[in-house]
Image (cartoon, one colour):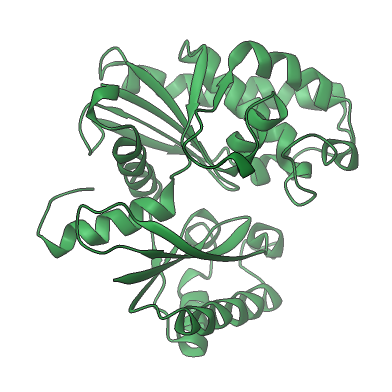
Length: 313
């Protein structure tokens, strides 16, 4: 079966097409189609997604539908995360997208986003990885989850996305005092939920997902994407703590020259690094195993499980 999932995030709108021949099979990527929309930058002072932003989203989702049809997709699903769920006019935007494209976007709450991403990480690393701690940072939020099974025993979402925090930093590069204040607030918010995840028990593996973490790992020396998804990649706290002060003094254009950092991702790299460093430090994580699967793959796995009545997040 050829499946497609449209993921409307705070930074990008991404269509992933995979072949999944039967429940339990490895979903094989067929095609990827995305655009950097940065919906969170299309907010009005009242917190609504602007008319222009909603129209642009509707047009691109319609384009994704056309691409999916050309690729022979039999089942197309659409989901939205923090940028849509936090907007003041969520329902109006969803209606506009549905009227334009025929796609009924399902809005995931933060805990569900963490749970589905955790499922993807569990399936990727398998049962032998033991109890997992998941760190996943998107444009609008940070998801944390921990557990031994496919459904995490604890899952939380915090408004600490790389894009959201970048908008709080003025200057390019940002002022040192402003960055210090941001780091203090980030640590405080993560520390407030740390006991909840710690009660799950001692982790056996700490996992990081998301484009930001993959970019940070690559900037710290991990293997490039061209070497394929099965190459083991890690991000160490020591390397990250060395990278943060270095990129804090760079402009976004200079960060874009780092290995694995795109021009679109470069402006948010510093804020993302601050969040990941704080999470790793507060949870005592010396090294993150970088997982190539995340929310989109988790949604596909969840759908495949539903075909057999298997229970998951």
